[in-house]
Each structure stands twice: as structure tokens, then as C-alpha cells.
Length: 358
Image 1 (cartoon, one colour):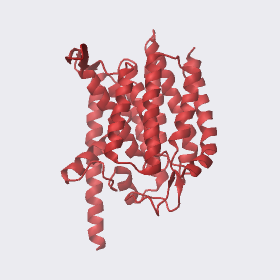
Image 2 (image 1 turned 180 degrees about the horizontal axis):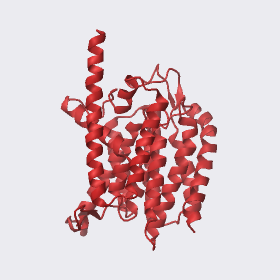
Image 3 (image 1 turned 60 degrees about the vertical axis):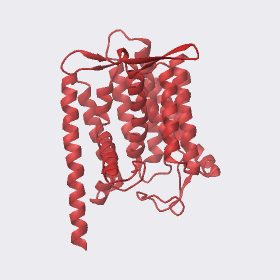
Image 4 (image 1 turned 60 degrees about the horizontal axis):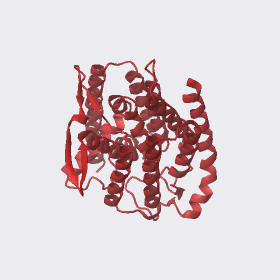
């Protein structure tokens, strides 16, 4: 039974994405989904020649094929893929036309709302020092056209979580191979934790199966995205990030685990938003000050930067398998201190280096 939940979904997804990705490059080029440094101006651009950036298409299709084989057709699964498909469409349109980041953000929220409507939300948050906080108990009730509606605080928190993961992981694809490795490790860790109980619910099985499907697809895509990349994931890959955000809470809430395994890009994303807002700039405005950019400026190659992220994700993911809730809290605090401190150090070190070169 576990083989049908772990190994087989992983292998099928890996093979599907690995086969579809090179085949799709021809179609992606015909659709004009190209990242051309002469046309697409971006301060953090590293490549010198046009590269296809519609990788989210084969990535999503490969995962969807495996899901059709191994996942049950249910309301939850249907809404999950409906929301992620909307994210894919929005992402592909952005890859083609570079649509407004504000419109993109609104459509991200709609994708998240669809998944929450399918029944995937964060019902409670575990208190590391004992007990839980029931988010469903906090709600607003109102009537509209003779219908009673209830908006739960858990729904709001879930929507924020989905949109945050979509954008945070999108910022973590600045270096070839960086993002697929993080996704694969996160999927495996979440999949393992979904199977930790002796008696598994339907949600546990769906969460575990889809987690391993996502991990397999990520490694299949990594073959073509590792430096030097033959294809970029593009914004369409937010569909995959949305799926990962969903499975991280589908099975009895593994929010702390997801935060821990994706800790480095999460802290980097938080610092990025704070830095842009404090400087009076839009949080959607691109720059070249993410952690992976700073490491590149310090002399690290793209492969080393990607490996750095993979290693940290693997270490933190492994720790999450054994730590208690209190232990995870302390681990998250340590990651905040270490990552935040590293970002400050690198900023000052590079600033001083630039001053010395003047």
C-alpha cells in the first residue's frame, strides 16, 4: 500500500515531467514564452541568451498526470487542481506578456480562495508550550440575499499562507536549479510526515501521495533547470508552489514543518519585503539583493548557491522529522537569527567591498 502512496507516484511524476519538459520546449518557443535578456529587462538577470521560461507548463502537466493515476477524484482534490490550474494560466500569461504584478497578486488570491472553498484550510495552530489555538472558533457571520455566510479566521490565515508561499518560492528561483531542489526536499519531508500516524485518514493519504508526486516532478524538472538551465520555470510554476502550500496543511497541519524546511527562502522573502517597504518602494519591484544574489556577488557560482539552499533545506527538513513542536519553534527562531544575520553581514560586506573598489 505504501508503495502506491510513495514510490510509484514519485517515479511516475518524475518520468512524466522528465519526458514532457524537453518536448514542451519546442512548443514554448513557438508560443514566444522566452526570457530574452535584450527584451526582458530585470536587474537580477544572469543569463546572456534567450531561454524558454514556460517550464511551469510541463511541470504542472506531469504532476497532473500522476495525480489522475494515484489520487481519488474528490471535491478537495478537484478544487485543489482547479485553483492551481488558474495559477498556471495566470503564470503563463505573465511569462508571455509580463502582466501587472498587482493584477497577478489579486489572481493569486482568487486561486487561494478556490482551494479554501474546496475544504483545505488551517483549522488550528499548535501551541509549542501546550494546547492548540482553534482558528475555526474565530469567525464572522453575515447575511446576503437571504443566505447566511460564515467567514472563518482559519480561511483568512490559509489564504495568506497560500499566497505567501506562491510568491516566496517564486523569489527562490533566481539561480538555476535552486527552486526545484527546495520543492523536492520539501515534498519528501511533508510526505513522510503525512504518514507518521498508524491510522491514516483520506486527507493523510492524499497529502502524502501528492507530496511525493510534487517531489518526483521537481526532480524531473531539475534535470533541465540545473546550471546551465535549458528552461526556466517562469511564473507558471506558482501552480506547483500552491500545491505544495496546500499539502503542507492538508494532513493535520504541518505548518511549522513547512516553515522550517523552507526556512531560508522564507526569511529571505520576509527581509526582502521589509527592506523594500522601508526604502519606500513597492514590495513587487525587482532588485538584486536576495540572499542568492548576495552569495553570487561574494564569488559563489550558481551551482554552489543552489547546493547551499538544498543542503540547508535537507538539514532543516531532517530536523523537522524528529523535533517536537517546542523544538521546531526554537529551530525557527535560530533560522531567523542566522539567516537574518547572514543577510545583514553580506549586505555590509559587499557595501564595504564596493566602497574599497571606488
